[in-house]
Length: 191
Ligand SMILES: [Zn+2]
Image 1 (cartoon, rainbow, N blue to C red):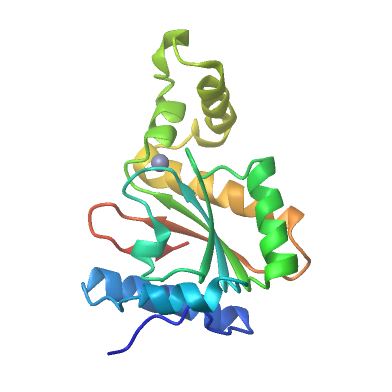
Image 2: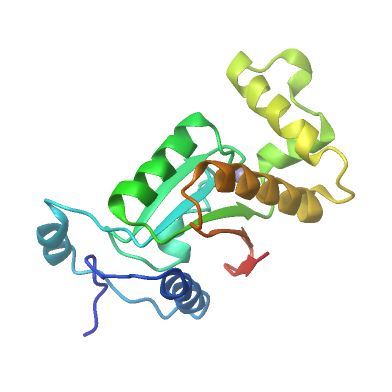
């Protein structure tokens, strides 16, 4: 049986992008490559070499290791509400690119994103939400408020804004891509 390779060596961005695209195609086809976890843990206990970094939403339907069909050790992931490139996310991706050797960084928004919905429609509880949550929605609102369809171009404009924010802070020439994950079909569409 073929297993995931947690120590796969990827040395260029095109190869990293292809691994994610191929993994999502397997996920959509329900044709996943299993991970031998005892072997994977043994290979990665003392080191990691993720080939890609991913910023995606905290939404419970949006686990990139699952929808890109990756085992442990292959993707370096930051998740938060609205897949927002905040200071901690940026710092994490700088580390992954400069130290761990991640070849690409990808921002993946998703359909039916509650953070984008509430930021776009300004339905954030009428001031009853905790300050931190209100702050996140206030950060997202200027980005998505003019979208005609929050569940289409609202998602895309947010992803593109986060891509631009990351490009400014990551090493020169490090590719940053944007994509949308469809929580209904499982497919990732690249922007
Ligand atoms: Zn979301």
